[in-house]
Amino acid sequence: MGLFRDAGKAYKPAPEVDLGAHSDEFYLHANVKAPRVAGLLVKIFVWILESPILGWIVLYMLKKDNLVQRLVSVAEIQEPPLFTATHSSEDISEQSVTPVKPNLSPAERVQEAASCLPPCLDSSSFSDSASQFKRPTIRDFFRAYKSGEPTPLEVARRFLAAAKETEDPKLHMAFFISYSHEDILRQAEESSRRYRRGTPISMMDGVLVAIKDEIDCMPYPTTGGTRWLHKVRPCIEDASCVKQLRSCGAILVGKTNMHELGAGASGINPHYGATRNPYDINKISGGSSSGSAAAVCAGLCPVALGVDGGGSVRMPAALCGVVGFKPTSGRLSNSGILPLNWTVGMPGILAATVEDALITYAAICDHLPFSQPTFLQWFNDSTIDIRNCCDQTLKMLSQHYGWKIVDVTVPEIEEMRLAHYVTIGSECTASLAPHLSKLDHAEIGWDARVALSVYGSFSSRDYLNAQRIRNRQMYFHKEIFKSADVIVTPTTGVTAYPLLSDAADTGELDYINGAALVRFSIAGNFLGLPAVTLLVGYDKGGLPIGLQFIGRPWSEATLLHLAFAMQTQCIKSYKRPKVFYDLLKKEQA
Image (cartoon, rainbow, N blue to C red; front, side):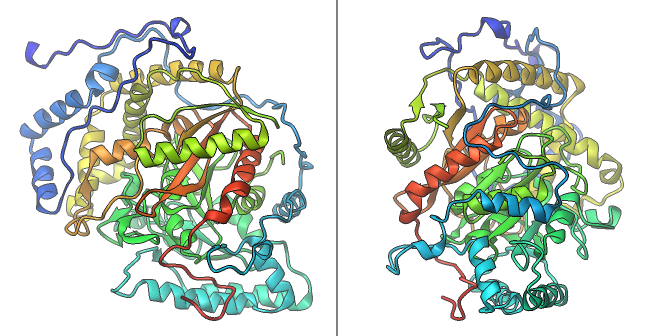
């Protein structure tokens, strides 16, 4: 057995790791060398993986080459496992925060949140210059509805026309898995009647909201991006977050596309189509909440819900140039969400602006609070365009607001990425095991079959060691937050990359770009920390670049405050996507 025996990494006790600016801790880049493949090559790889003997050998070599074996599986780790990323409830000392009264209804919380917002980000505050792109906000829809021009019903009809146009073969944007004309128009008619009577439920009454097809929303099935999951797990009622949006009068416009089972970061789904990026339809949108991010980007709705298990809200938000917000683990209810990743996943918000994210957050969160911060940055493991853009933005904001940058070391980043991969993969297969054993593999997409094969190869030792690494990272981040309010990073290490022509039917295997997309997102999920991303610029090809704030537990108010301040400085340089619909206007372009 010596051929298959590896020497694992021996980790020093966490308190002995130097977190200072001049630490000698070595930054390990992702050891990913496999070429990007799609089509027939993916099918061949699946056939190899699913063969009894050869598959085992290939899986072993994959884990060894990607350092899962040395850094996780056979590593020597002294810390005990930490199985959940939950945090004890505590009051965070935050400046300029207005606490929300307890026991308010979702509509009342929306009103409280709206009263905290300054007027400066309304579309009306912009000049009519054609060079300045502005997205309609929730407040813009609310004002328009109160004036009667247009009505929610008129906007719903414009949405349906726009959604149909995006399905044209010339675009084939693949934003939605399912939506119902009848249900959308019914909701819109009810909302319009409320406005005619002068009794809208809340500022969100009549506002269009899309729901990722990982979240229960009646009357639609919840497919998880598959052709089969809804058959064994029927949707019988709204998820908790959907119920609260519905109680605010929001118009729920259907279920958005996603990477199958959330098992990928590209947003390519062989069953429902590859969700395309509205800034360039030949580029990926990111995933797994691909349809939600792209629909918001294209103006089909100012808000959508996603699920974030490994950056699955923030990554597509960054690639599509919209806001992506993931609160602290436990802040939002997971009721009615597919149980694909119990300890790392939770609902998240994709929105046109930070103010829209806040209003939606108020609607779906039962308890929330509404600063000259200090923050540290971690920028280097990204493309030059991303690094330069984020660095320039941070310097501008530091000078404008007097924010202080603190240099620290965040150790064992690649180790954390691999430990998270073992965790989310193990939880996914454990959740689906009763169904997968009875399922014809032909019903599963080719790239998802690769992912499930790898997930199924993880052992109990792999999982336990991954939780030991979680414990170490929890310690490191708690220590870091003693000297900084937030950690600032690019949201992704690369911008949106091209869709392969032969990936539509099989998906793709692209571990190099995949690692680059997720590397900055993992702490938010693995450690249950709140995080927000928003657009700060574009690469040389005109594709969006996102900057991310990661905060200490329960510091959502600080994160949204910082994001709002950053957006105020960046918003006038935002560019119109190539595919965009302004539903408040009659004519679309």
